[in-house]
Image (tube, rainbow, N blue to C red; front, side):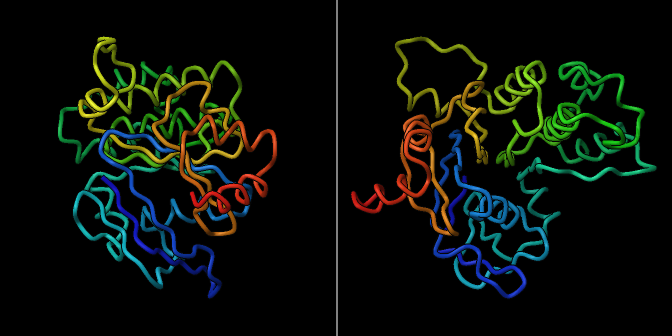
Length: 258
């Protein structure tokens, strides 16, 4: 689904990502850990194609197509969707109208009202986008847009940030639905068979790791000082970070060649 090769990125003339290599297969969800300022959001913004993030070396491939220098709207049309951590308030634009725009290029017919009901958002559809929304309401609004867009690759920047417990349960359920992870499978089926049935992939940024209480992940990775340092089971990484901190986690990974 997504292949990143030797990616180097600058912002304002300063290198913030250096030699990043990442692969997210079809149907897999990957968690990206890292301390504040490590480059996690910058990597996500670069994948999506936001301005201000200059690729100076390397390549980004999505569904076998080179998107390294592709405009952001073309990446969205190809099937990449993003939920940013702090989306803006948009005065004069109703949430319903924005969701309708998101649904415009969906491959299937979208029932916007049904989607809104699924995230308990009917009462907000005719209000200006994010105007006086709580943290949980903003996250639900972002996920509603993604559900309408129905992308193949979903990028989520700290979906648990600023969200209370009640909203977090609903957000976790919605993410699982988006990623086709709410389906029940026979116990006899292998992990590979289950993943093969999924069509959605995801990269989820987390600082705290709380999102893992609500979703399952296939892989975890650590970004530290602009370098991708470790790749292994997400819960194992979270456990090590909790016990020893990021610096010790990275030092250990470098010692064993991960």
